[in-house]
Amino acid sequence: MELKQIILVRKDLNMDKGKLASQCAHASVDVIFKSDKKIVEDWRKQGMKKSILKVENKNDLLKYLDMAKKAGLKTSLITDAGRTFFDGTSTTTCGAIGPDEENKIDAVTGNLKLY
Image (cartoon, rainbow, N blue to C red):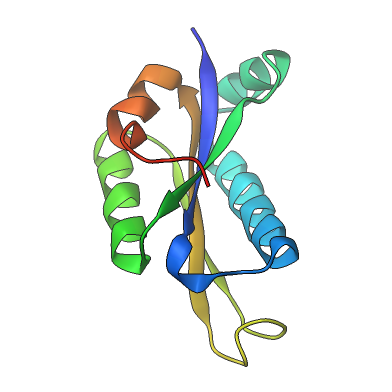
């Protein structure tokens, strides 16, 4: 059973590389805290496969995370406080799905492109 994790990032925000990397890290770690420990351990042993995928905007992000939840997958939604990049505005930036079975995640996000 191949396991993976997906990070969904909003394309419309045009985050710089550093901000994007930190937001993806927040999403990855946050969803792991919610995940089954056995799945996380198996995922670690397999090399922690993950992909960063792009979504158009906040509505798309929320749509895909909702679809994942309905499919029984663990998810995380990240909202940046706006202290450094978004001029003091709280902004939902990205989300994560899994780790879980690759085919379950692909059923939800298989049509999305790599970031």
